[in-house]
Image 1 (cartoon, helix red, strand yellow):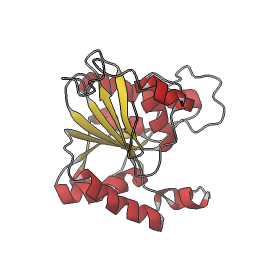
Image 2: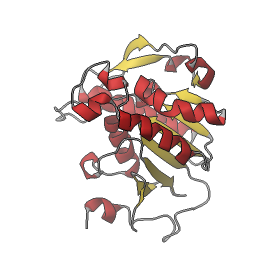
Image 3: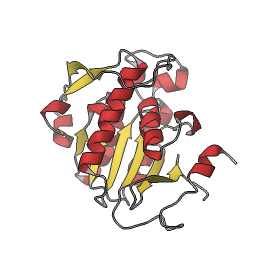
Image 4: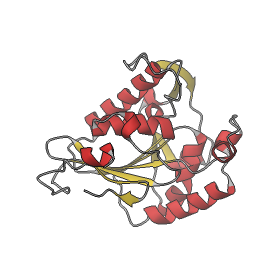
Amino acid sequence: MHRLLMMVMLLCGMGTVQAEGGLDIYFVRHAETLANATGVNNNDNSNIFSKTGDEQVSALTDKLKPLHFDAILVSPVPRAINTILPYLKETGQKGEIWPEIAECCWQQVRDNITPGNLVISETIQLNAEQTLYFTFRDTNSKHNYGNLSYADGVAQVRAAEGLLKKHYFGTGKTILIVAHYHSGQVLLADLLGMPREDLPNLENAKLTHLHQCEDGHFTLLSINDKDVAH
């Protein structure tokens, strides 16, 4: 059995995963970009969807409609914003920009996993259309962070965890997080209390669902649109 499956067998309340309170987190990685499809990474390719990516955005919009979210937290990176924008338009909801979940932690050198420093970078700019569907959490969320090292990226994700704990842990709410492959892996692995390497790859535009138990720990209910066998 994969180690992930062994770890998630520790469920809430002796097998009852839908305990009162807690928190439900749905995570989705942005839709497929040209960079994902071709392996050629540059600023343009990284934020333009492939044909498959466009189809994924449409399918994701329909998939999310039956669900209710108390908050939608979105990376400020264009590919994340544009993944969720059609859903926000159709449902009249607003996403909240969280620079702490922007892409990070892609560096190959990971010897030092002790969190580094939060390095403030450029101010986040939203265009006229985006301002209709996205808000900033607060004044501190109006800037990006620079990822000078893997450790700095871990610090960024740990900041996101701290904010999640402050605003949402134990509330019984349901939130959607729209982010990235690397930052998402670090965040979800930390919430599940497991090594990042034991978490399967996060696929484009596929939903992953975590539930927080009454004792505070999280259990994985589904990943990449597939239920986890307990």
